[in-house]
Amino acid sequence: MRSKARQTTDIWPGFVDALASLLMVIIFVLMVFVLIQVNLAYRVSGQDATLGEMRQQLVSLTELLNLERKASSDLAADLAQISRELEVTTTERDDILAQLANATDALTASTAENAVLSEKQEATLAALEAARSRLDERLAALTAAEKNLAEANTKLAASETSLASTESSLAAALEKLAQTQQESVEANKQADSLAAENAASRAEILQMTKATTALRQRIEELTTLLGDLEAQATRDKVAIASLGKSLNNALANKVQELQRFRSEFFGRLREVLSGRDEVQIVGDRFVFQSEVLFDPGQANIGNSGEEQLQKLAVTLADIATKIPDDINWVLQVEGHTDDIPISAGRFTDNWDLSTERALSVVRFLASQGVPANRLAATGYGEFQPLASGDTDDARRRNRRIELKITQRVVAQ
Image (cartoon, rainbow, N blue to C red; front, top):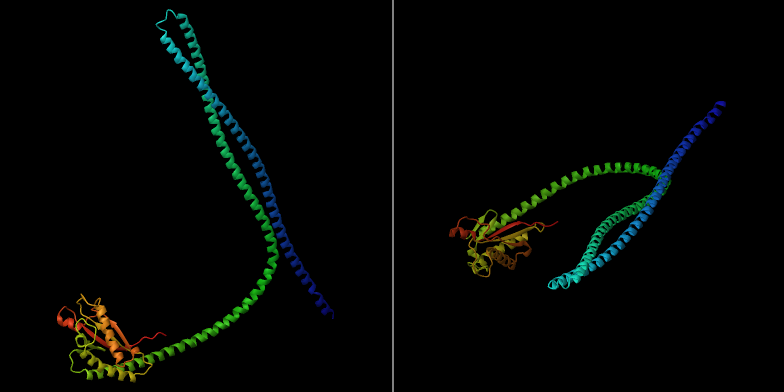
């Protein structure tokens, strides 16, 4: 009984260790949060101090700008005053020059009367010397005024340069102030975001634990499903191979059956059209020379041609009733011409003529009871010759109508 009591009381040290570990984790998290808050507070306080310094610099730059503007206005007033004095001096100079010219004229006029008017000449000379003295003084004043004007212009240009530099510094300071304010706002937002993230991270850990468990279960289900799919794929490959083999066999049977009916059709045509040099067998097709069916340069079938095609239509209609419906066959009628270009008439070129002749044969066979859905017309012009060369015999052989039973491709 005592041993059992000891065993029941031994769980408390482990429980205490677990509580101590949990408490240490909580304290660590709180320390991290406090350090983050202290760091943010330090950054915000540093930004506030920087913001205050920027405001002081802004005030100083504003005062400096006002002083520069006042100096610029004073220089502008001085410049206006100097300009007015220059205008007055210029006017006085012009008056003195006029007086000097008048005095010179008077001196020249009184030369003949020098003896009589000597006293008057002396007075005039004295006045002239006085006028010259005043003129020299005005010229000296004018030179000084021009010098002052140049200095004023130099000071004005320097003031404008300094003003532009001050305005640039002020704009940079304002931009830096706005950037500092934006950084302060972002820092506050970051502090709020960190607090929210700290609260949301615990819930996210719990959700991730649940998601991990569900993901493991889903992986096990997908593994099982993948095994089933691989087995089904193996069975499908075997079935597809068997189906392809069966399809190839069926297609070969249909081709052989079509070949049998084609052989029967050609055999009966040989009997019907035997003894005619204008009709030849070339490979798997019958070849009618165009002269048998058409007049030169025409696409309308002649009387003798209709007789030949009637025999063909009867044989083809009889064979068509024997061919099973599941065999997709078609009688292809191909028109060919020689290489002599068409110079006049209703046909544009040899393509047009060969196509119209093939269509005439197809329409005639359809009128004789051959199913229209088993007929096709094609024109090749002079581009598929049987005989090479430019002799009359070679060209006669190339002017032809070919008939061929072939398999029709049906869209699936």
